[in-house]
Image (cartoon, rainbow, N blue to C red):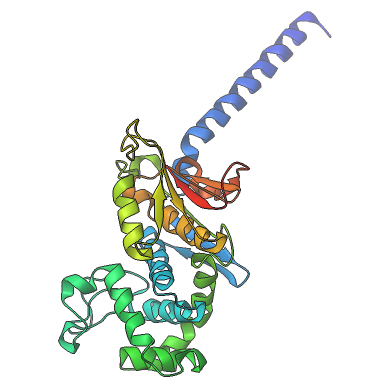
Length: 286
């Protein structure tokens, strides 16, 4: 090959290498922004896409069910009801004086508007009504839901049962690592891990034990980069992990680790990845 052609071949190859490297660097820099914000749950029953708000509300419903020691069927009923009433959103208003995820009405004795806009409180009130329905576990979903809600057309709840089953499998922890969420770096918030843990314990119950790095005097270290939430079993562990992931953007959480897997905010769309050191008896929140 003539010297000039060899020189051009070398220059062209170098240019292509630099161009490829630049494209890769650009992709890696922009990748966290490409997917926007959102959540996805996937289980043997199917997949569902959710907004961050919907994901957080779905995780809260499962958490309250754990606190009340309710079976998965109760959670499915709650999901189907909330999807029909609000699409799992915490609505400020609705038909007449209806409020919140379950569109409960203050005028019908459900509570104050402020209470019903609180996802933990409104979910608790729904479950309190559901367990009063005789043999609710053996009834068709729409019948059990209607006896609680007393809506205009209770038959509409039935159409959301399949979606309720998908959500319940993921957020009750029956299927591990089934919920993932993502948001771009410019939508991250200041870390408020202590507040996140307080809200988590309000939903799951005060029996959820919290530990982590301590100061020389033995007190919890508020400056520590992580908190350890001890769980009685792997299923509840995955429910806690799902709660943390769906609330990560709101509370500035950057990492969740449990049972051999981890989720990180900077690669949230990738979901859960292998992490051999992640413990089974606790959820690590960073």
